[in-house]
Length: 473
Image (cartoon, rainbow, N blue to C red):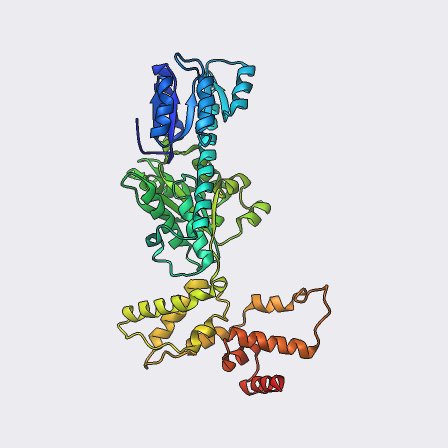
């Protein structure tokens, strides 16, 4: 018996034939990578095992001495309804199969069934159990509304509720072996999220854990993709003077992070799909498959759903990667993080440049909170470093940041030019009313600072002051 391995929960094999238990164990380990196995030959011991061990799936024979598989199935469904049961019987009888499914079995297979069909059915049951456990864990975390391992996310500066929801979701899927798709605009910090997924997976693992191996697949042609991920044997191609382990093998026991997955070629997409489906790969120049023992995490700033609709990304690969998806919100949707990030980056830049951290003008965070940040956190960091490199006095100059705000943002401009700003079911406001609403909104965004509000409106401060006095009268 084992108490670790894949999946996170145990898989219990119940059969009175020792030879079948041994052969089924070898099949599951070799073909599906399932090695968190328990074996039981005496059906009378099964209920005791379920009470003592973390069992999530039972593979059950029907014809056994002492307690039949059908009676055992009834007891398991009644006392442990959360545990999945698959019947693997020597009886090829439709009526028996239907009765077992009615009693609550997840599936029914005949022992003489083709190996591939049997393994795929067990894989499917494992995935279903993983999803059920993840849903329960996610529900519990959202009800508690807290992050249980904040140290894993210590490098991600945020107090945003949306980001906390992402952290809770990642904690809930930490024990899953399924791929994780991290999406979000460029510069939001997808690499840091991938690192957090890796660390969470390692904290849930009972072993020592393997490394996080990162590969940017953008620009890799099919041959380089295969060689980078799968490695090669000596003599596989001209210049292959010695064998080299691929990134998949280097990530054994850990996580393989594939960045910019949206740029992957069609041919490479097929190979990645097979790796995810079969858990096997062939090094270049080899006709013997190797098994993958790493979790796959991918990231993209592109909309894979749209690429899939246009035929640029395989539909089957898209759905395989989309089992677990974490969407990272852009910086403009978590404006409360801007002052925190600004302070962090200024201190980081000051330490690197051997300078003292300057005093930040109180209006600077307000100014930045009204900037859309198309480059997200990466852009804010660059601005902070640029400002710090030019800094000479005790008070931080705002010139670098003002120049950024003077850049015309095409998305915002397009937003104003599009119809639908006003509710079509309500009458239009008068020009005077619209003007007053616009002034109120600008003052609210500028937190009462007339200079910043005037900048947002594109008018001078005296002109804004005049409007405010007129409105007050």
